[in-house]
Image: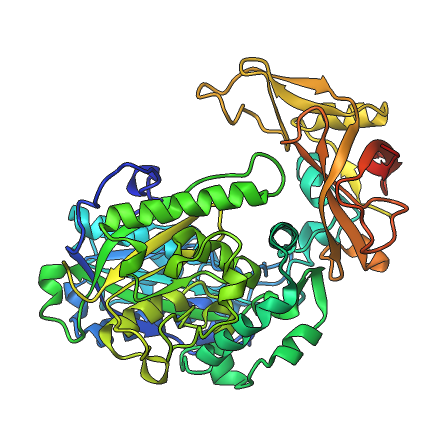
Length: 440
Length: 137
């Protein structure tokens, strides 16, 4: 079996597509997370392949499904947080020999194939459908929802994992050299870190609307608070520290106006879900969470970095696509879990959604109000990457758990959890899912 | 600032060759008469890819936006941290952007909106690189 990458036609990029044809007919049921860590310690049982198997098995158990009932597997094959296995570095043969291998010795260590997972999960005897949803979980969820809706699989696992090695983020490879090739030099020669583009958009936003970086502090404090109530997350597991406004605002700059905490912390993690048809989901262990729609953006900036005009036009377009396909409006959202890594673009997603009636330029003022899980306007109840580390997964797990009523201490209490939206990553380009406690 | 050297490849060769002649050229689609930057093998706006050429531009622009880099991933630039990293838009087409360290402008004192003109500075291997300096309006 050779796993294909999802075709472009599987995504709902366009406006005007109407209500999603599988609205309410696909459901998420099981959730599985492996323990997190800051970096890989080199042991076989903690490599990215091993933690992925752990997360998948937990999702299967959580759903109460026999492994031989699973007929689909969607995988995000890229697992790097910005850390790569250096060319010429000796291969960890003890790790490689601990698993059934594919042709690529770094499979399961610095990348992940569906073939590697199936070779090391012998209990998955009936998987007939595999597909890659490249990028992040948001992408893979869209692929999984459409695949189950289209009948390509009826009980399908989806997984996203991240590896993180020793060394500074993105400081190896070409960035450490004395010269670089001419085409990437046009964008990389000037040395902007990963958050630079987002920092620029935020700076333009502040100039246009008269806002400031200090106004981010309540959002950051609230996100960390929510993250500390996310037992699967990095900060809750390893560094249960509040993020007070004074600490946030005193942290060092990375690319001003983006500071250290505006950049999510790279970690080792794996998160998995079990999807099924709404009909089959009725017999599983957890309450089904129904998919009302999935929507995507494939917009690219005209030139080097997105302008604020481009960002606002696209987030508004994304909001319209989300609502159109789900057959809902902004008023129907119980809460939102849009992406936040980097924190300085979360407000673009909020404004594009028109969450709680917010218009362009108003989100930072909204952050100064009650945005807690106890209030009527919860913002990022998952805590996102700010609250639990770099994964782009927490937002989806939180939507499922909130709508199943099993988010624990993080459970929203100021609203009835009925309909939610999650997705990302960036304001331009991304994949989004609308979740519902009811299929209707 | 000592930038990394540049090793032109097939796609970017005309851009860097022109820089060595102290000229700024930008890729242009003959079919839709639209500039694009960074360069690509096809026109991003034409369904059939479009025919591409390199077009000399005026070398005048404006500072559109900027950030201050305190934690740079590029080793050679780390000794100069913190430094300005600005986005310049071209007068020929304000939709086209280029990066600049804005030599001579104090850190975090960037005059957004100011007029700039292109200059060329040597990188680590001698390849000239477009940079921008503030000029009077």
